[in-house]
Length: 199
Image (cartoon, rainbow, N blue to C red; front, top):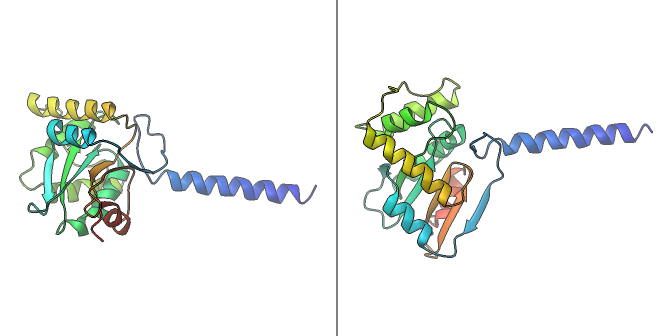
C-alpha cells in the first residue's frame, strides 16, 4: 500500500509536466492546448490558397526564393514565441504573417494595426514583447477599417478551410526537398530552420 501512493503521485506530477509543456505550443479558439504536429501536405493547393487568398505583412529577406506563411492571432502567446524565434532567420527567409481573429475582441484591432504599421518588425517586436510579458499587447483602435476587417476575416476563414484548429500555423516549401510542409505550433529557431530546410 505504501508503494502505490508515491507511484500515483509521481504519475500525477508527470501528467502535470506534460500538460504544462503542451501549453507552450499553440492556441486554439477555445485556448485549448494543442499538441505540436509537423505534417507534409500531399498537394500544393493549401500553399497556393494561402499565397493567393491570404493577406498580411511581409518581413525578412525580400529576395528569398521561397515564402513562409504564418497564420497567427495577435493575442496568442505561442505566436509571440514563434515571432521571436523566427527573427534570427530574417536574413535567410521571407515571412508573410497573416493575422486571424478568434481568441478575443483585441485580436482583430491588433491584427489591423500590425497590418497597417509602417514598420511591421518594430510593431511586432513591441506587441509580442507585451503579449509575452502578460500586458495584453499593443493599444489598437476598436474601429477597424473595413478592408482590414475583411482581410482578417478572410484569413480566419482560410485557416478554418485548411482544417487547422490552432495557431501559429506555418506553411511553406522546404528549401531542400521542395515539398510543401506545414506545422501547427511554435518552434525554436533551430527546429524552424530545419523544418524550412535552411539549416
